[in-house]
Image (tube, rainbow, N blue to C red; front, side, top):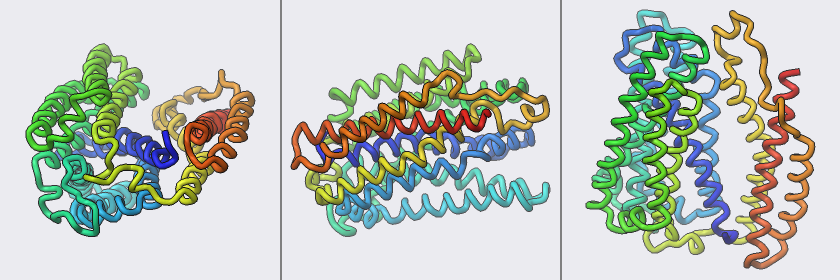
Length: 402
């Protein structure tokens, strides 16, 4: 891995996290569309409450890194795909507004209208983002300021297929997550409702993904060749296997294991697309050609590493509290015991290893002009981020438990 590729790897991590976490967040609102069960609506709102704003951190992260590290590609994408990206942004704003109004001032008689806005905007946003990705993946975004067609760049078979896949996989993830949350809270009625939805959505997601592969084969020759060749093909197969495994786990009511396997199935889709498109970001523009200057790339990698020391432990702690049921109303009423994710961890050795990785990675990344030595430095910096984040997250969780 070269220095020019390091920000791209970071973007891929962020995009995968947004597809999994943000996708499930949007999907939860899908199950509120036209729903008459107040219990199901409230369960979805309460499950999203602690995390719905935090999930957008990943989208902001991806956009910022792309803008900084690959400015020519960023300008080309946003000038050509102005319409779907504007629609996605509008959907995010409407969604946040509807959530705030529902949770705060809306009367019961008004909540159906608020729920409709909330659900429709939560469908609109992932579809628009998927359509934009489809335009990039199918080679319809050329290099240059607004060089691509403002309409056909995202109104095309591949964009529509990817947009539908984004909506359906979000609904699938949300159903699995909500079934697990209901099981943890002891709500058997909601477990049954979302278990059936998870099984149905999983089957639909699988059929939609297969249909999407057919559409891509007919509409985007280069992407087709990449997807059906190694190593992207392994990611595609892995996604299918993980999806089938998730359905079996849901059938057996093993929801926590299903939560992670479903996430892996969606993550594999994102990784497969990235592997299929390499080494180009846009038609005729490779990663090396699109990358900013070496000082900018170094500043980006180091800045992300330092920022991750604050952001990642915070997110680890937040999601740890959510998954342990600390925000469940039922848990609060019954006095659930507090359990720490760091109970068996050893933060001090991890922190020492992280500092060692930083001491090795920083000089190796900054000093050499390139080559394998610099690649080792970048890997060491990423190891510093991973080890330091786990160590600090464990320490924060221990402090919370104490």
